[in-house]
Image (cartoon, rainbow, N blue to C red; front, side, top):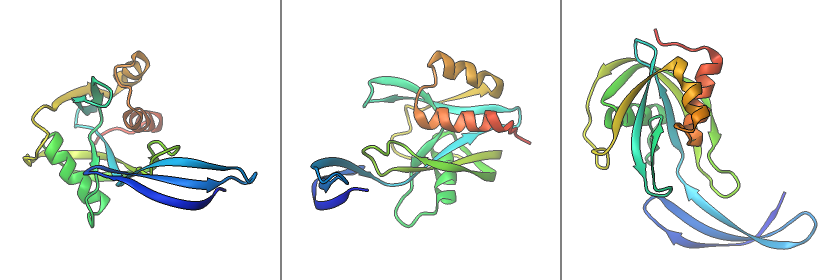
Length: 177
């Protein structure tokens, strides 16, 4: 374990905060750590009644590419993860799930970021549009679940949350009802 000697927040933005920590390593050496503080999020594998994964295609400025991903989003202060799942699915894909199963969770980038993603499976969908900002450029894409490993192997699906969530569902042999 490292002992924190000092901590200084150097940036406080809308989505992230950045702090620099001076730490003492177990060896006694002193060094610094740059830590991105990000709220917890939900990541949702959505299956329709025909066993298609419902994905979103959207431009991601940080990597300068259009990515094919599972729906996801930040948990608002005071919001429960299940409520966030419902809100995000309404905003991003226009459906409300009648069944939500917890599949676990994971840290997105624990080497420098505090973000934890709660992973869910959503099924039994009903149309339910909730208008939200920043969703007008999202394209909803349905992909047969058996094609998912091929899209991951080809790099068409290449973000960590989508790879982790989709492979979890594929490996468990989960299917919609």
